[in-house]
Each structure stands twice: as C-alpha cells, then as structure tokens.
Amino acid sequence: DAGVIQSPRHEVTEMGQEVTLRCKPISGHNSLFWYRQTMMRGLELLIYFNNNVPIDDSGMPEDRFSAKMPNASFSTLKIQPSEPRDSAVYFCASSLISEGNTIYFGEGSWLTVV
Amino acid sequence: QQQVKQSPQSLIVQKGGISIINCAYENTAFDYFPWYQQFPGKGPALLIAIRPDVSEKKEGRFTISFNKSAKQFSLHIMDSQPGDSATYFCAAASGGGADGLTFGKGTHLIIQP
Image 1 (cartoon, helix red, strand yellow):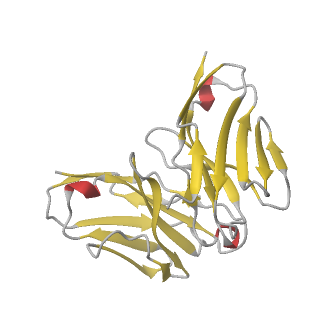
Image 2 (cartoon, chains in turn cyan, red):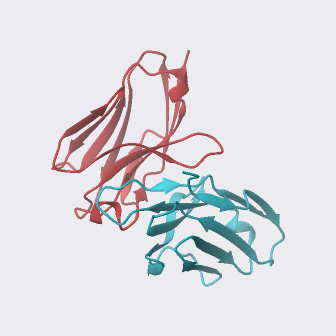
C-alpha cells in the first residue's frame, strides 16, 4: 500500500497568499483527519471526516481555514489568506471507522509563510 | 485545556537502559490509548496501543502500563537502542479512536551509545 500521500511536501509562500494542501488517504479507509504540528502547540486535530462528511471542525483555528473532501480518495486543506503564524507541518491521516483501528499519518506538508 | 499531559519533555538514556515516558488524561470518555513514534521529517507512526480493559500490553521491547483509576498510562522501552532515538507521543481517543486522537506534547528521547 502506498500509504497516505500528501502534497506539496514543502511550501514557502508570502503572507496573504492562498495555500492549498492536498491529501490522498489509504485506499479503503473511510476516516480522514487533518492535524497541525508546531513546537509550541504540538499535534492538534483540525478537522476530521467520516465517509467524506465533516464530523468535527472545532479545531480549525479561524475562518481562514477550510477543508473539503469531495470523494473518498481526496481531501484539501485551504488557508486563505495565509499568515506567518500558520507556519507549521500539516499532517493528513486516515483510518477505518471501527474501534481500535490504526490511524496512519502521511509524511506531512511543511508550510512556511513569510 | 490540555487533555493529555505527557512527561518528561526530553529524556536521555544509556544504551541498554529502560526508557519510561508517562502520560495522564482527564477525559473519562477516552477508551483508546496509543503511543506514536516520530522520526525527524516523518509523520507519526503507531508503536503500540492499549484499551482500558487491560492493565498492561507488551510488544517486543515496548510495554504500555495502564492505571484506569489514576487516569495514567506509561510507555516502557526495555533494552533501549540508539535506533529508538525519536520523539514519542502518547494519545487518547474516545470511540475507540474513531473520533480522532488527542496528543500529548511529546517526549524527545535520546539513547546514548
């Protein structure tokens, strides 16, 4: 299995620009999670989807952040407009909706906003 | 509100020694407690997990000890090796993990040769 695939792996953008991060979950998985990792706050759950439906977006920091999952094999996390404090590693993860199943993480998208 | 507290922040252990990382949680609805290992530049990867119906789970050199009444759980790495040097995160979740994981802040472990 190819694992969770994220793109881009690295992005440097200027403040005010739109940023779109992409994720392809593991085939057959029906839960998808977006996490953000920073030194100060650690790993934070931003939003998660079950069967392509957003279940809990209470972790999304501001209205500048939005996430979509148009189908079972693709999700996006968009930041518009981006700010320097959004600089972080953004992880996508997926799993099967059942008790105790492993949540698999991608290798992350490293975002720097200057 | 930090729902999962992890300690220590960093840990240095000699090769062959025992590494111990501790976590405490607040939410009694949590019913799934995994530990993740993260190497630099990589995503977290599941190391071992436990559910509250058992007090201990062992997989190779890695053991989770779980104390439901104290709302605490810990990771023990026996015979620690330099290749174990990484950041370790405890986590907790309700719904068996289906509701997403709440992570501790992480422990940076260094195993000295």
